[in-house]
Image 1 (cartoon, one colour):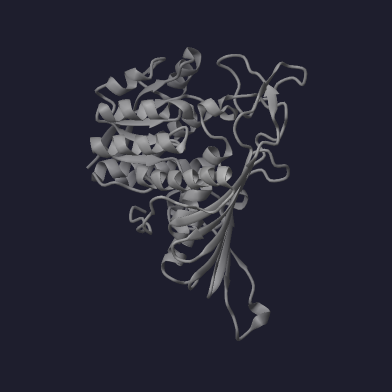
Image 2 (cartoon, helix red, strand yellow; image 1 turned 60 degrees about the horizontal axis):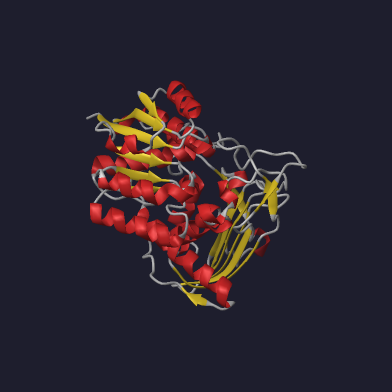
Length: 399
């Protein structure tokens, strides 16, 4: 039976555009599901941007007042892609109105706000989802299955990182992403993905010792309402201070006994989108990098023939989760936007089935608890225990 779900999207910058396209693609890519997203209303504080999004994506209406999305009776699901500093307020208003929520990470501008958002949704009983989209690459899902099935043996070492030089130019504009009053820097923006991926693949993190640094301390001030963290200003423009972190690293212990290294940086040269992981076990190893999203490096221990004991490269194909929804052939590559389509589909599927899916706000809470321990370690210079533990996640069954 077809199921129509009214959707409202708040924040029509680049990420809001990606989410809008994703909902439009569900009826095509997941036609058998019967899910029919209805784009009811889009919201942005800049009217021209909201109006353009309405026309471009086919929303029934637009508004410059995000509160209007929450009270619209045709909206069943609210999608938040606004700046991090106002996520908590929006989440609270959405759940107060009984709306299900997909919120881009981080759910709060800092871990305390994320935990407050989790509490609000638990009390309201609504379904939630978080934009940890790198989870959805077919070969990442396949890697998760291999680890869960014990194919790699006991996991001994995990290395996760997100090295992305989007802010490497000192003339990159001082958007809200670089101001502490609007939230964390790399810890919230990039490291949140790294922590979530580590949890999904290896289980809960119990102890951390962490470091941070600001490498570019001043940036050009943009005109109000214009410019993103990808845009550039003039070298002679008036500058403002960067007040949150460019770089974060951590040594971590997992509940399973696995040891790990996590690292993230937004100003690095060379790496463009090195969101990647390496997992080493007693029977084999694997590694994946978003820069080569459709490839997985896989190694099985081969004591009988050491000459063949090496990594082999798997190409994404119809035997891997979700790939067949986009094309029937091997090595015909999926892209970033396709991961957001899978994400949107799983969010709306959870609403149709009235069953909380992953990653929801519970997974965001687990990330926030690790972030809190990292922040404490910045101050103490010591190992810090993570307060609260994430249970090993169940396998997805909505492929």
